[in-house]
Amino acid sequence: MVVTTTRADTGEPLYSTFASRYFELGWCRSRNRFKMPERSIPKEAAYQIINDELMLDGNPRLNLASFVTTWMEPECDRLIISAINKNYVDMDGYPVTTELQNRCVNMISHLFNAPIGEDEIAVGVGTVGSSEAIMLAGLAFKRKWQNQRKAEGKPHDKPNIVTGANVQVCWEKFANYFDVELKEVKLREGFYVMDPVKAVEMVDENTICVAAILGSTLTGEFEDIKLLNHLLTEKNRETGWSTPIHVDAASGGFVAPFLYPDLEWDFRLPLVKSINVSGHKYGLVYAGVGWIVWRNKEDLPEELIFHINYLGSDQPTFTLNFSKGSSQIIAQYYQFIRLGFEGYRSIMENCMENAKALKEGIQATGRFEIVSGDVGVPLVTFSLRDSSRYTVFDVSESLRRFGWIVPAYTMPAGAEHMAVLRMVIREDFSRSLAERLVSDIRKVVADLDGRWARTAIVAEVKAEEKPGGVVAYRKSVRETTQQQEIDGDRRGRVDRKKTSGVC
Image 1 (tube, rainbow, N blue to C red):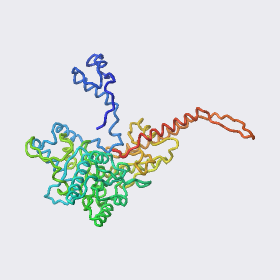
Image 2: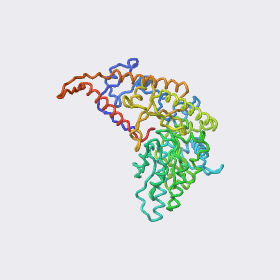
Image 3: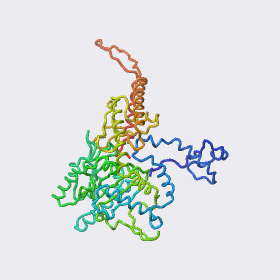
């Protein structure tokens, strides 16, 4: 949810481009856009008013800020529309939808190498996204840790999670909302993911889990979860603790199995007890679906599961919300059976090839340094080689002229002095779009170079003779003031763009 800051008493009228076709313009002028109108209007008018305003939104296909899927096949679109009135939580009323969710959970668990047999049922649930999935995983770790501490007669009021400073903001939300300390491993120059050695050093008896990221939102890189598992196993053996690992695979969970099948990051590692993944990212489904799966049922405390019967039969539920649509669950199942392993691998390979082409094009301009690695999710993160005349924020804003939405931001603690641009490559980003984007970047850089030259003011130099024959030269007040304004504006934009995680 975005917290609104709009005033409701502005009295601003509601206008529509073609409103006069449906009713008198006086109606528009008399309506406050922040208050519900007293009278109804024709359905055509309501559609036109909203459609006119939405024209100013960006083009989702050109939004390279987001990992979220922006295109699906028409056949899946029809399934989504047909299920839009089904409440996901009503398992008794929509048993087939519930069955499709269970199939998805089992497919994902097998994809992540969970230790379950072919006929066994996996433990997991569909969520609104990875944010909810992480909240559920965190609650399971916290409750299991508390139960163990109570049984041992030890204090259980100061739980903590160890993770990197590159975590997405949902981890900070979990820590804040559920009273858990977040111990972050700071980044460093040239190393923009969590260091497993430093992470394990921060683990103590109150650590409910270490959260590792498969696909950093900042650079797309995979953290070394295998090394983390090894180091943490050794520490657990030395201390007698049983600190587990959670893998936040929101971005990389549907990439690694297809591009890096031999990479050990999932349930093949004994300490990995739960994994979340975003269906609406590289799971290739529209926004609104995530997944959380556990290694086995012992890792999900039974007391966290609620049972209701007022919708029909007994229905177990473990979610933060209740009612929600079924469409995205059905869409996820469609993608699984439509594409299969082969289809997902082909799409991910194509995304990586397009990311490689984009990276090479950006490097060829000679103006940028690539920050993202070669192994990870398909994205390109890069910084300006020379930020003395303009910044990545200027580049980001200038690209808007061509329709591109490209985020610029500063890195988290330990590397906050560094500002970067990031472009996420999705299935709907073609090679021709990559070539066009590189061309537009070249135009933007040339324009910013020229703009700097045009706005530079030649100093009015006034020579003043000083005692001893020394000649002093002084810049004009106008030039000095303008340079201060430029520098101040740049600093202001950098401060406003600071972030601890980008979606």
